Length: 429
Ligand code: XMP
Image (cartoon, rainbow, N blue to C red; front, side, top):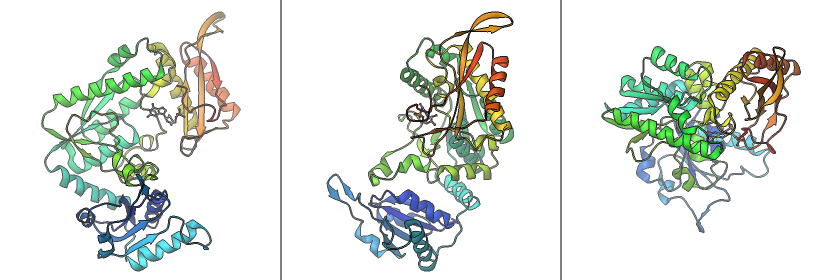
């Protein structure tokens, strides 16, 4: 293993994820583990240079104050109990902690600042090979950031022992299924099963207007299609997963219980009896992107804006019809193209179009015509809990309006959604 590590044992501090990030910012890899980790498990972690017990006000679980196993104090590496608020009386929590941490990590633990993507990838390749041996791995590859980075990492580690399954449910953005095939099959020479399930999904969704029902149908059908493909393949023992650190630690507030319980199975069936391979489970989102970049994935894939699992299905409001679905896909492509041209790509958190199930009268080719409106939405947020509306230049809005109303069949109006969250949500349904 190429990286030194500082382990944080979780005694319930809300600060643990931030602490791990601060240590990583010093160039030293850090992981959070449950306070009741066994001695064997802890000693099996590679290159541990020090252990931090991070305290805090949440040390009570089910009415019992938790404490760390006594053996921790006998470890052959330095152990520090760090209060979650840092030292009292020092300038700011962050500054005080950074100095304190840095002195401890380098001066006392003698850790080397060798945490970087190159070493991370080298270590993961070795770990994946060790776990998988000559076994076969299956991966649901949506083309989103996490699954794409896992795919690239697994391809590097085990090549054709990996089979990726890409389910095109017809609700992806323009060009996305083609990009998955181009990048993974053509450029990376991966085993890729491309499943055209468009008709299947749209048939199941026909006439269904309730958003939660739509979500359920999309999720359930995805599992069905994936299971069918998995059963066609033989001898698969492992399932690759794009689980990332925030999926596991959530906000790190409820102690080890949450650390252990949450598994982002991405809606996949649990009864397929696969062993999971989750090489990104210790990375924060920006680190996942850096990893993808280091593995040679294109920027358009690595820096992709968030996209809901049910995809355009929840942006084609009400019962999905093929013509409105195509209209939302085409208008979304125009919006993205013009945002990129205006230099807004990567600067705005999320931007997309929505098509409601209403028509209004307009004029086309000198005649009255009832057509749909398209709504533009562009928002910024840190955590998706609240969001503000992007102040898009009026001339850009006019240009996008002109293009959508001229290029997208059936659309005669364009509206810009000025609503922050709250009261609006980011998506419309
Ligand atoms: P809302 O609309 O709740 O969205 O303000 C917050 C963030 O979550 C995304 N979102 C979803 N993501 N499945 C997903 O994977 C969903 O059903 C879903 N609904 C909303 C949304 O795009 C935004 O980033």
